[in-house]
Image (tube, rainbow over all chains, first blue to last red; front, top):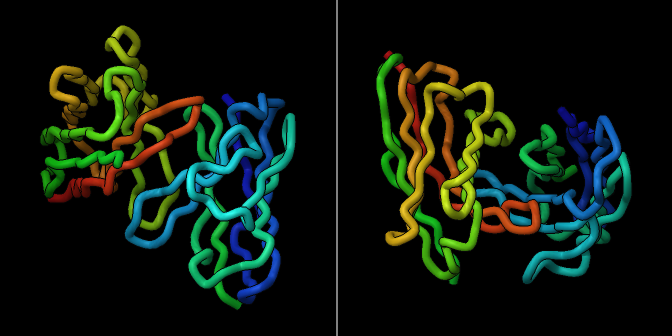
Length: 104
Length: 117
């Protein structure tokens, strides 16, 4: 069973800063099946990135994904106030534990 | 517009049963595998169960196997989750979500299930 480890657990940043979130798989996975989600309090998760690097519909281009094999990254180039949330990576039926991006 | 609307959540005693429903619109329901994903209070996301388009293949997380039953009715664009022998650790918001390209494309708003004496 593949385990996804996200780091850091919490990222404290200011609006306008760059956020870099990591997702590491316990074994090599196809980048075709690595996705990222954003979840705000009281809301359902929202698909951001699929296939490791493809943005979902209506996702702003400040969000980008990269990586392969065991190491994947979600980058938010310049944080907007609405980007402070929890982010999860996913492969098949497995989710990482999430990274909370909070306002510093 | 894609919509997934869950219903059936509530408070139930340990050992009790509850049935969740999810009605889909805005996409071809019968062409998508469907899933239940849950989130315990303050915790992360946990996949619960998946059913393929024609119900031929059904999968469960080990944590619910033998207690939960997933089903679908393509004629009614509906997905269900029958939850029996409920435990305190089943307390969570339950989301229905479709799956396409190996990702959970769209999510419902969630249904809260609370298992407590």
